[in-house]
Length: 337
Ligand SMILES: [Zn+2]
Ligand SMILES: [Zn+2]
Image 1 (cartoon, helix red, strand yellow):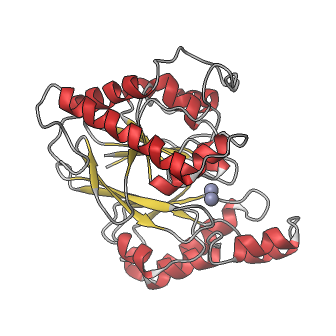
Image 2: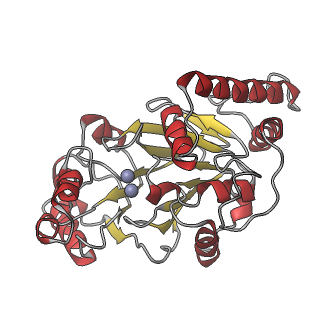
Image 3: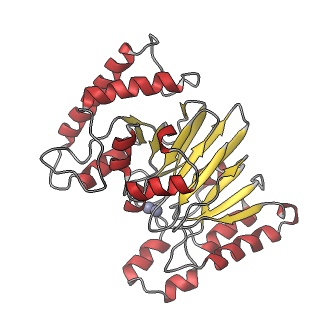
């Protein structure tokens, strides 16, 4: 299995998680052009991606989503509340009543059902069918896509003209629910709820049964609740938030209200809170911990690293854990297990 952090930080987040057969992009928080550039730099082939998964609808996680998904013609996985919040963000001028939203969702469901019935394998793949093949799944989704919206031509990063295209149109949408595992190809994905000020934010655990490896992404966390602590057990590669240094945040340039938001239980994890998790709750299983979502204004990479290292140093047996710093401006080399 492989994790490639393309970007991490308050200005954009995106990570590739791949097994031998399946490649997923988690969040698309940079422009499509920049994401494609980062993938080229990191030797990740965009054409080989099977799907995009979204943690939550904040700009630093979705900036390039619509353009990238349409260009690659791959499905996007959201929770339903996150999808709805994202559609609202993309189409601020259209007010959609809940009744109309339900109708829209119903139409998409019907299109997917029709596509599954028409899929090559009768009885078609389902979201919880671990044995479903990537090919079958993708074929079904693409049929669904065709039924939902017209095929779209290649496009640039420029927003589409409202008259020609709905900016929230996607090739295909799949819903998941936090706490309920689902499969894409040979990867099992377990989403878990995170405390953060978005519609329905979550983190993910990825597992490849054939490779017996587990990787996780846990950022945008106001604090470490019990469900996140328990989700992050037996993880081999852990991308963990270490957003800000408390002193730098307090003395820093943010307005008071923003400081309060970052510090709140639906904001971001401080270096201190991350260290506390590593010292007290972390099971020591990870070969590699990647510190991510560092604030450029309120953190310094050396401080985040020092804080995490000190926490692990207090536990002599964990000296073998490798700690890396994810970057905002460049991709990290792929972490392969
Ligand atoms: Zn966020
Ligand atoms: Zn974020």
